[in-house]
Structure formats: structure tokens, C-alpha cells
Length: 253
Image 1 (spheres, rainbow, N blue to C red):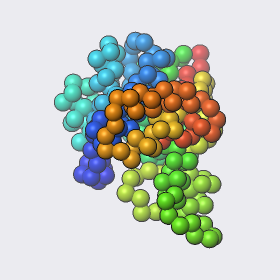
Image 2 (cartoon, rainbow, N blue to C red):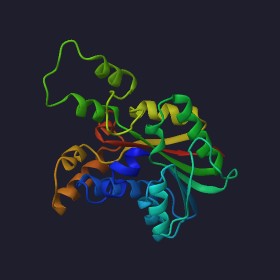
Image 3 (cartoon, rainbow, N blue to C red):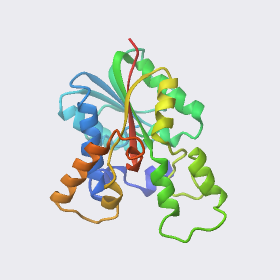
Image 4 (tube, rainbow, N blue to C red):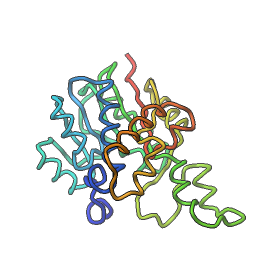
């Protein structure tokens, strides 16, 4: 609540904070629209409604749920129906939606049992055959951000080892992440929650880190990053070079 309510503008992350934001936004939208062309969509942990509003404009019937009052207010100002809520207990009936987005909840839940509960809730409210898009933060990127561009102590600090081995964040992080995934772990969690996984893809691609480090970038660099991201999205190991991973899954028929 403190981070998203007072410290960080989630909306700017996808637009003006760095050139990586627009790439993340465009890639996420094309991943969704590549599978779903119409219908009713629930955006779980949808922040201020950037993705939800874009889907509204594209003709979808969208509802948003998020735990942060500031996000709910901003989403409503955009015209997105939004309410306060928790991904682990969705206030909607079974099979009420054609698709669900989970672009934030999984990396804010420390316990695997809570992540699986949130995934099962998403599956419950989506009709059989409908899609669930579940995002994780890349453990590879998190480890690189923590350890690179500084001397490597020997032995490695315990928090470095914990991050690499289990995805546990280092203490003292400003960003309130509770878990970092590998692509394989994300697929296993989604599958073990009763969903059928079609693919786990990288979003921003290997050039995302470069774009995150720049204040601005020309259109040629943005388009090149998008091309690389699309080419690398499904390659094991390489897909983990994206800051965000997305599992594309369906509710069993």
C-alpha cells in the first residue's frame, strides 16, 4: 500500500518512466490479443487500468480488481469498472469471464500456496476453454540487478544464494516483490493449479534491460527491441532475459 500508494507511479512505468515501459505494454497487449479477440475480461491486480483501458478501447468488456485504493480511483477515472479486492478470493461467480489477466499478483505473493490459490481463483471465474495470462518476474533479471556491476564477494552472501536457488528476494528491497520465477517454475505452478499451459513467453526480450537503463530511445531502437523480443520469447533460458514472463494458459474444457 505504501509503495504503490505513495512512492511509485505504476502508470508511468508502462509509459514514460523508461523506453522499456512502452515495449512491455505493446508486447503484453499483443500476447493477449493474439489469443483473445472479444468477450469479458477480468484484470486481477490490474493497477491503474492501463491494460484494462486499452482492452476496453479494443471492444472488450473489462472489469478490474486491485488492492490499492489509488489504483482503483485512477482506473475509474479512465472509465474502467474497478473494485478493491484480493486475488486469492475473487468476488465473482464461476465461469463469469472469457479471460483473466494476472499481470501482478504472483510476484507479490511469497508463499507458493497463495500463488496457487490465486491461480485457482482465476481459473474458477473463467469459463471452460477461456484464457488466463499469468505473469512472473524473472529470477535471472533479479539476480543480475542484485549482483552485476559490483565486486563479487567470496563466498556469495546468503541472500544472493537464496534468490538464485528459490526466488526469495533480498531483504531491504524498495520494490515489494515477494518471489521471482524461472520460466519453468512459473509453468509448473500454473499447471499444478489446474490450468492447461500453452506457452510461457518472455515479454520485453533481451534488449529490455538496455531500454530500462536509458532515459529515451528512438523508434528504430524500440522496433529492434520488439523484433528481438518476439524472436526470443519462447527459447528456454533466453526467455528468462525478459524482466517479465507470462504463462498463457486455458481453463480445461
